[in-house]
Image (tube, rainbow, N blue to C red; front, top):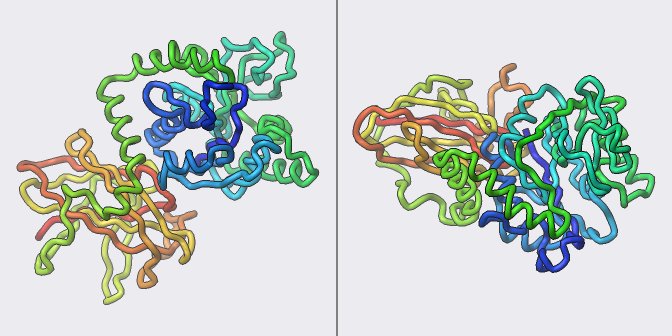
Length: 412
């Protein structure tokens, strides 16, 4: 599943609280709002992510680097959120998560939303007051109306600004956005377009009442986020879970550095040329065979974003991780982050960038439906595991590649 974060707005209602920076870069709990969001998305294996920037675009790019893709709204002061979404309409395809960058939310909200079938929208049944709140109308669990103009007496809760779209929902929203912009209405909001497709797309309402969240529009929202919402989120997370989530975001933050360095200093580059390597068989995952240019074939395991494979490996011997990204076209350059866990604990992050390799491609296989056939260059990293028998887990965390091919090897 891909994600679109709308972060082009001026944030003028925050006044001096924003210090001229976009709302996405306002800090709560020691990190920016958008970093909190990327942390939640990566924890659920959601990616790639595109951020639609506008006001303070360079600041957002400087903060996030190459961890995300960018689309820029050059006229944020003259347009609204639907125009920003329209600029990123190429991303409205397949399963999509759409959210505003000024939303701080507990990760459990995202889990609940993703657990629903089809298209779904997060709402809070305990929050239905205020002229600024976008209210939600429901009938038998289905969202039937959406807007600030709904009467509070008929509203079932407040919309968070977090919506999951299945392929039909994404296509319908794209068509509606294109029609509205084509009619010259560049001042529309995304919620207006979502509202207009509710008659043709079934959108489930997911009630997140009682779980901490806040949309930051005004100074008092920011104060509440810092005084109450973030402490409540932080308190409910297990210390190990919080440390792991922070580590994941730290990895995303240093992606550009890692890409330029080529590898972590703790890992070794290519081992001796004379070593014969054996591919270990993971306990799970989709295995395919890729033809080698010189003849024969090799086994690889396919990982889509968020998927993980697990393999038993002996320590005190070199262990090689080999990766190939799957590219959409021969012109693509894929960047991706691979996370590793050793016996249940964080072990390594590897951030890579790879170009098209014309000598290999994915085989025709019905199990690979929806995955392009072009492959990127092979990346290799060697590690020395501690002594003993270990459980090694490899996850495709986030990136621009549709999928990655992975294999773990040790000397024969």
